[in-house]
Image (cartoon, rainbow, N blue to C red; front, side, top):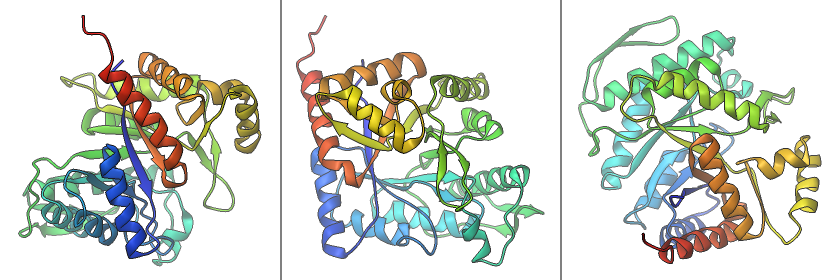
Length: 315
């Protein structure tokens, strides 16, 4: 088993705690610090990530994920390029189709149907990546418009800037298999009536289906994109069965699905590491994102994985 790549998603509350968090995440050996992008509901991610860049040297920095429905390609590309320059080449571009109706409504836009959101995502993703690569872009809608848009300055240091797709739409999973560097699976299903929360979609069969779509899209590539899971909850315990039962009730799923899922780390650190090995064998998942509230537990898992790797017999 390879050592999983683990990143942290967090929301800044104030300058001192955000800087301390960025330093802690880097020192512990995480791969990246990622910020949510929900305009009006959380801090501006690119401002926050630029502040984190100032107190770190190695840590990757990116959105998880930006909302293609409300982000314009040239502005998004400019933000990513600026972050890349200010961080010395550590920016990540994370993008999804968007799901929160309020984010369209607050900008005076009507949320498109699923097909419209898919078309908008592809237009924004392809345009943003082209702009970051120094190309000139013209789009003539209806999903997105731009006229001879060009990113003249600053240009990103990285070529290309690493690109993560986050989402579960079938069409976009195939597209991401062909185009993305990383495909992030969240275990989130249909958006519920409150417009923010989701059904849990944690079954192994559903992940099988999503991974098959990614592989289908990647058929012509030398290497398929990396596969990543967003960890919704972490509980280190000697009673994995009992903890999984409680989590299953909270997420309206089954105990068996919780124990088998990459979206929950449950059990001793040894049991969690063994589950990760199973996720890699079945789905090729070698990357995880944990949220800040679970950082203490994630530190223990990362320390165990690092220790095991250092002491693994060499054949």
